[in-house]
Length: 127
Length: 127
DNA sequence: TGATTAGGTTGACTTTGTCAACCATGTTCA
DNA sequence: TGAACATGGTTGACAAAGTCAACCTAATCA
Image 1 (spheres, rainbow over the protein chains, first blue to last red):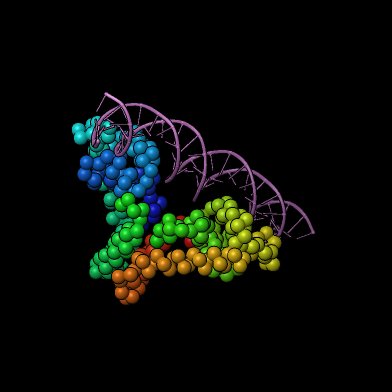
Image 2: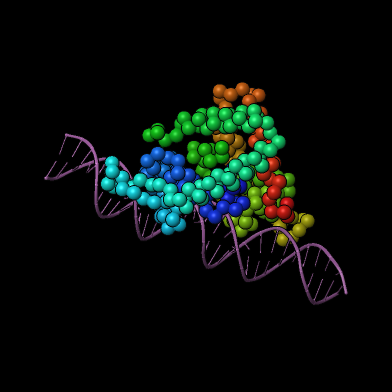
């Protein structure tokens, strides 16, 4: 799904979008949390965050609970970008499902979720 | 789906698996056909095919219809590898769907296919 | 306090994929 | 026929994405 969105119009590479989403929607978001959520190397997270910082889409603030880390927040520009991304996603989603019923789509999502849960079961045992 | 399979045990990177599948299942398979099917650069196809050749999984034969191209076929080792891959895929598939009914799975596949068709509609207009 | 762990940054590297140039063959058409 | 152009495939240079290991600083724990 996601890739078809970038194909279209997006000014940001796919991973950047995902990380921006995390910054926007995850409570008390830090680099570490993103790395865990996305199961990716923290080095890469750092680099993408730097890109987003340079692009003025996010900002760092001191983390009162841990001086080593920073809390991440979207800037107004970041919120606007997020808005735009959501519009595009919604757009392609409706294109995908234009001739399906609401019930079919919900059924699909429920089963997809179910399947991913089944797979998450046996990942690296450190959870 | 596919990525979880490689995670597990597979001795081949993901793209190699997909290309081996094409060689095994596409009639009169050539590099060009694979590149079209997978919508990938033909340079990369060449390189992956070379890997598979070196690994002894496929073989090239002259194409009587066009001396520039070669027909691709799996070797016995390639067939065996394909067999193994299918087993692994089947395995994770049943893990994903262990607590779903046959009907649910079929419904899911049908809708997924439908959605991809909806998206294929507006790709680069050269079809 | 000292030893160890954890968050983050950086550099070197691998993997995967793309772009452009090229060669040899095929195709078209005056 | 033969010149011009198109096509399948190969190669080299490169960009993008991700991984590994070393490191610094702050936190934790004995």
